[in-house]
Length: 278
Image (cartoon, rainbow, N blue to C red; front, side, top):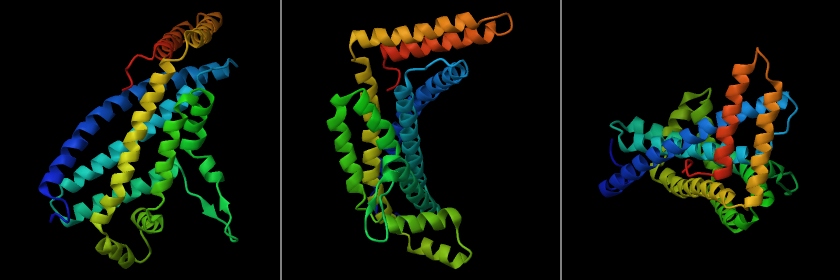
């Protein structure tokens, strides 16, 4: 495929950067995924037994970190497809995927503000977004010391709206849903500007990587909470373990013992916050 705008030096730098990033983020998301599976299993069981499961904010943090990690991996993979493309259509396909990931990723992270017929801004969709509803709540309720960092990333999300999302949405819609008239889809391919796509990608890629680092910073700040708070959380987990002990019988002893082991593992990560989620 003809290189549309990237120099060989730039292509090499992107290839090296994405390779390192994929390796690092894959390891981190694997850790988060395994921990979330344990926590959700415990949470489901405790809900059935009407026992409160306290670390809900921490679960939401891990879910968000996993989501951002997946976006980074998707974009890095799409970039590498472009760099390794031998045919023009392969390059255009990767550009289409980048557009889709940007549109869908931004929508999930922060959502869009819409205007009604009289021009009033409607923000309820944004207030339900992952960034505001989940991460914003964590900062407000648990870690107000990180408000400045949160606000800086929010400003970056706001600034990114300067990207022409109307064009992105049209390209995204045609890429996902196609059209009853295939001429319109193919015409979109012919007009697709790969250079413009990468210009849109770079600031979004920067936001995602800063967010991934920020979620790690939140984890570490949980670790820095006072000893009294840590003891409080440890007591909560230990109560859950004891509660499960009371529910044991000859039929469920094996399953409950496994749940208790999961709770102990979650407790150790949550209380000690060892740097397993990098």
